[in-house]
Amino acid sequence: MGTSNTVKDEFATDGDDTSGDPPSNSSLFSEGEKVLAYHGPRIYEAKVQKAEYRKKEWRYFVHYLVSWDEWVGMDRLMKHTEENVEKQQALDKKQGVEKNKSGRSTQAKPKSSTETKLEKEDPKNNAAKGKKRKTNSGVEKDNVSVEKLVKIQIPSTLKKQLVDDWEFVTQQNKLVKLPRSPNVDGILAKYLEYRTKKDGTMADSIGEILKGLRSYFDKALPVILLYKKERQQYHDVVLDNISPSTIYGAEHLLRLFVKLPELLAYVNIEEETLNRMQQKLLDFLKFLQKNQSMFFLSAYEGSKVSEGSTGKR
Image (cartoon, rainbow, N blue to C red; front, side, top):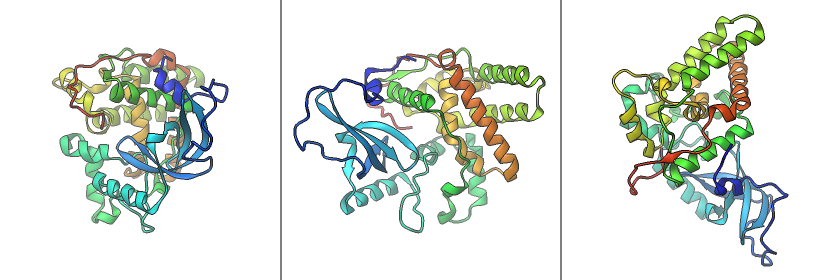
């Protein structure tokens, strides 16, 4: 999979060359230190796992407390001080993040300013969010606890794909060339064929889950799966009653899996059924990973967005 030089640097291994010896005591952050780190429009609590001096600057491999790891520069980190925590809380408040009883941000990754913002822009398509509003009467209950979220472990190579995706759109002003081939419908059909051949029969449960994924994708795409820079493209290509799943491909389908835990939290499903569904979703992700070079683009095309647009979803 092709990636930008920036992202390659972000995920460099211990064997990568460093650029000379670092100045003594020049690193602002040490390994094992608890810090606050910018990620997109938010500030998250994180822990420095590794510090390296590369290309004349310090790079830090941080583990977010929302189960996400990446290399970042000094400009993305802040000391975990009372003053900076207040800054984090102020930003969270601005973004609409709820706090739990301890006063700490829940930081559930699927719940982001994306949903709040795009929900206002396109409320008619947000069926899942509408259900949440009906079932929750108070502001304190507006956020689903992390414990109730379905755990979907995205493979590391697909996590990197998500970072590449973010880099192309928000940093390089590039877009996925549409329509995609294979599109979401095509990928779901290929997976169904794969499972049928492997199992010797087509399980009804697999078919139902794939139908559900397609439905979630079509409804969620314009609401919570697009970056701001992609919205004009969406209006240009999704016309009349065309389903987004016939236009978009693996790049946007993968984004759905970041949001699925919270979306599924509002569905009335028995725990046993939910566990089986979780295993099937993980199997589907492994299928995407196995066919990553076939399903995902290695490069995006230059976009026509204005310079004033931001990369926020």
